[in-house]
Image (tube, rainbow, N blue to C red; front, side, top):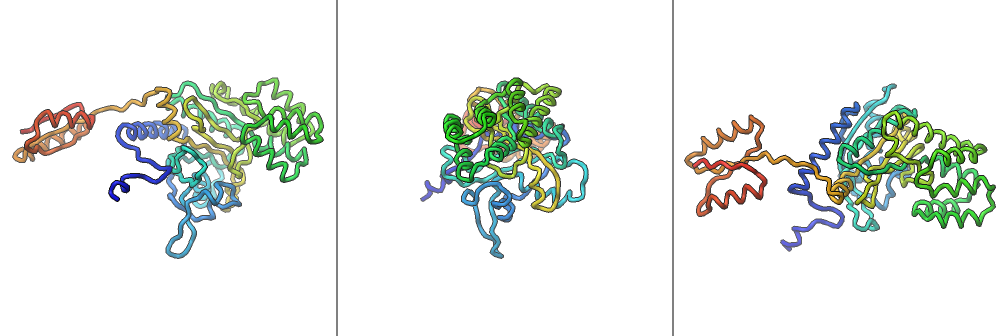
Length: 395
């Protein structure tokens, strides 16, 4: 029984020692970058009312939520996603604000899905939300911030794919697809099965313009010529055309930030979050099969909480980013600045005064009382294990 108590449940794990130190350093560095962009920190509760993440809002499916009840019988859930919580806060505390609100956060999210093989059910997210600005300028600011955050983390090679929900929506509308066919198409695109998409499209009676647009969904990096051609093909489909125009304007603005090389257009990009209404994006790098960052525009989400405000945001999945950095052998420097003071009972006052003096000077100090029959070598080995480069014996 005692051995069993040492284990964690499936999907969660302990983070300790140097890994924990590196994670805190990384988070502090990224949080400071967000503050440099004018984003103000906010904290939301770890659990909320079930309705905050309901099906109508379009976040995580109910079956994947950790649900429980309070004393009054209300259904509560551990947050699976930070954005709806931020939206609730903005509607509550910034309901009358007419200018943009910039908020940043850091916290853990919880998703109970057994199909996530090898994926943590509890993960740390750090992100930002820009509320109250529906312009392409806001889109570009968020994408530029994502690129600068990944560079600040130490990554040199990464790619951010950006799409638009209007592409898929416009194609479905233009094709007049029935619900079953739409769902089949959605699953094929989500699974990157573009051969299946081609077969499905070929089996249906579509105009040649639509068929060619469908064929572009598999392109992971749309060139300027391809984008121009897509706009020509979409001239009769306003939803698709508007989405393509937004992506084109976004890429132009990203060149002003100097991060255009990190961003590519993916016309077939989709998101499991149904509240997205505009651009959507995901960032990848070597050593991580999952996105290290994801986000998008959600112009209708805040209306569920009583505020009409277009918004866009992103979340860095810190655990995935840490794993990618480790696999790429990119080190997060951890400064060892500790001193171990070993003292005898008779020197207790002197030891405490010395420790206080060192701490005031910025040194990390641990104190330990000398015990027989331990030797100096024992304490020196202990200091090394605790990564304290200095040791003082006050005997």
